Length: 111
Length: 114
Image (cartoon, rainbow over all chains, first blue to last red):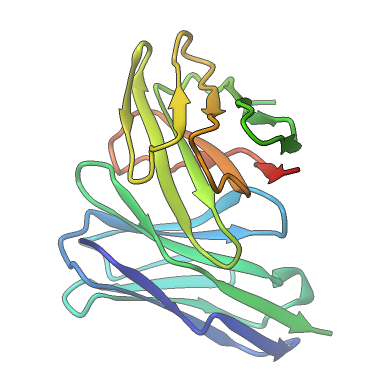
């Protein structure tokens, strides 16, 4: 059974700092991995989708990497801003379309 | 605007009562999903549907029921058999169950027990 772990559960940084969020998974037989953002009391917004054959994906100040063999992904946020404050979740997907979500990392960026 | 609409935003359930959460999408997506999210936790799959008049149980289907009579609609009923229904419920949709497709989420319904 796939298990997805996100560490740390919460992170607080000053504005402008670069930061890394971690996601690890136990079964490396994944099809792709997706990072989401969730604002309090809201739904999920997709940030980046990285296929199992890819090493990284970039969108603006966000960069996601994937090391399938070691069961790890990181989400790098450059020059963090208060507007980046949210919970970030990763989800790993099998080729059957089943998603397993981590518990998320709650990020607070202080002005 | 294309998207997924969940209603109501907040819902209260009395003991022994069944309640229904609405999920409507105008994205022309074939696949729809219901997830449950408990505080500080990730999402767990309740039910999913790949096509009209067909749906499958997810990981935590007990105490829930769904229907898919129209492509646009996938309502979730929380029955009295669900003993711990308090949670945040999220509906999602994709073009189909191909994992290449990004899931689009609604804004959620928060269910509480009176």
